[in-house]
Length: 236
Image (tube, rainbow, N blue to C red; front, side, top):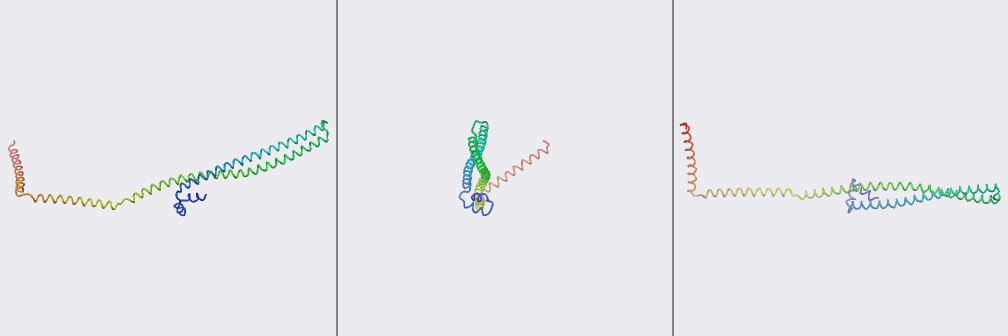
């Protein structure tokens, strides 16, 4: 029972160190419950045997009392027959005395059997109380085992999750993102540099044509706007 005392006080600090040293508290608890159930089976068997002894003792007492009553009746019948002349007086007295002796022996046997039955019944009460307590303890430990299993499952899941979270390198991830940002910035700057180089690499003719094309486009736009205004003034 000391095993259960250690297991089911997990909330106490000293029990924590004990449980930590156990290879598998759940398996140990299950084995303890199986042992208790085995003890319960043996107790029930002993209880049944003691009850049988009590029944036999009470039956012996009842049978002895019946024999005592029977011998008393026989003694009375012998005396009655002697009075009626069916049996000689001295013979009837002798047989009646023997019947009374048998009656006394039967009464003694009945008394002894009754005392034995009472003693057995006292032990029977104690056995029944022990069986009741054992059943209660088994039920209690089974409930505690369910709680222990649930706590173990939650603990394992939490430990696994915490371990996974601990393995996540947040600083490394941020560092990688910063490097990627720097690389993108560098690529964009490089693209702008190439564009600037491309613009500076144009010929003078390309520059002139670009300016002329732009001026021509502006002139065309101005001319179209003037024509539209003149047309509006004429009321067309």
